[in-house]
Image 1: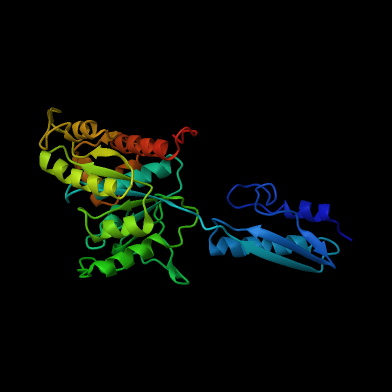
Image 2: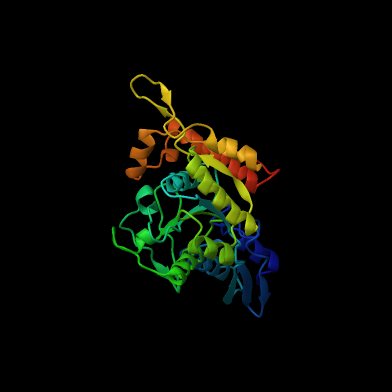
Length: 335
């Protein structure tokens, strides 16, 4: 006849797929209870996919069922709803490279150890499917929720670009776009605890829906150094300020161009404007990304520079590191 210690020892031989520890040691389960030949165990499956849950349940049933004296195994699975942190990346106007920054910051965060996902919230002009080399992929569904598309960079993502044909116009009014955004946010994100949300330019319906229904943890504003872009960026900052969403900082994109022949540096969009604006507004300056043809070519090819080892990755790694410091103040650095 088995005893509680035997059952607990057997259960702890089953490995938690995330931590690599036994289920009891990992906190996935308490020691099983035994009554009238039936073993009962409550299993915490938070953060596991449906397939992983089924596999773990089968393993538990097999292991406990092999213990002498156990005639029946009952497994109850519970899961906590994980509160995910949304980080909005926005701009006051189009053409400042916000989507490129969003994709590369997500990839850089993954490289630094974060459990990060990416949402392309630019409903009318999605571009992340191309930037993240996932064009032509269709998300599957589980129940009423979508399952994000995996990418070769380890960053799961969802975009309207996965749901419509390339070049197809999306002629939706505000409420329809807001509902689409909700489906992207409320998908089965699994272990992801931070979502980078690439917003459309400006301060329209999508921004308002995100703020009202899904309150971001914070926002990053992308701008070029030129005055007009900075004026528009200030409007985006004001929207988040009015809504109580903290501004994590400003990023200056297209900042300086190095001639590939003579290596002289020129500033076609000006220099230092976003950093100066951050100082004036009392906001952190997160970093500067140069105007590089290599970044543009890699992005168009679905090969984010942040995924590589070249110098072009470093600005994005620096920005991602500062974002992680903001998310985890006083905690251990992940980079």
